[in-house]
Image (cartoon, rainbow, N blue to C red; front, side, top):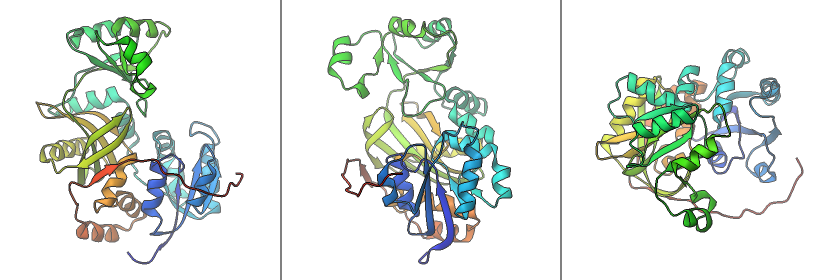
Length: 358
């Protein structure tokens, strides 16, 4: 593709760093205009998109009508949602979008998104569908459930994980371990590394709530992977594993692409069982038994940009497919070659700009 296509694309949550900027970079050379919307205004974003609009949160009753108004004003042909909340509300209103001539990039069945988004549902669904390796998990609604879950997960002999069923960015993630250095955990570690609690501390915290929506899960031991997939209606076209080499909770700081056939086959099964369409991110641990997922993100992930550097522009493929340019997409797929052992290292870099009020 040498000439730009004559379509304007709307990108939601466009100023989320780094995924918003990475998606813009992936699409910029190929489309006429990129329009950005977000709930927060960061002046730097105007350096990257052709126009920017401030919008409310996806749960706001005025969200859809405002998105449609912006889309009509800018002759938008496709919307690329970058948050789960926006994926859900846009999917619920998919018929309204279609009536207005707007495609939804990464369009999936609403129930599929909900299954992926709920960490307990994804485990129970895929286990029921016959996936061989899934982690042991128990839903936690109160402290009674928590104590039972801890017993089933062999605490205190083994640590276990607790996290909200629906969350992102590792919010609420804790490792429950009987013995750890409270001094080091609370006073010597960075806030992002403060991830340990014992069961009594957790019960004390949970005691403040009458109804919880958490999942307790076995602590998986092994190498950590973030896997980038692309599928058409349940048929995987790309499965690209990246070993996560340096981590903060919810964030990969560095990684290395690895052609691991066992992981590729495992994630392919997940995609087929979900009948997934578009870009997906599966996070898993390669245990002694084999790969076991612990999170499924039905959206593009921040570090998916590594696949573009390695030869496959997943954001572009998803956009072409949504717009009906399957022939173009197939040509790119045919020509693409993945450069395995491509590495990623995340750094901070200053960008200077002239401040403009929103």
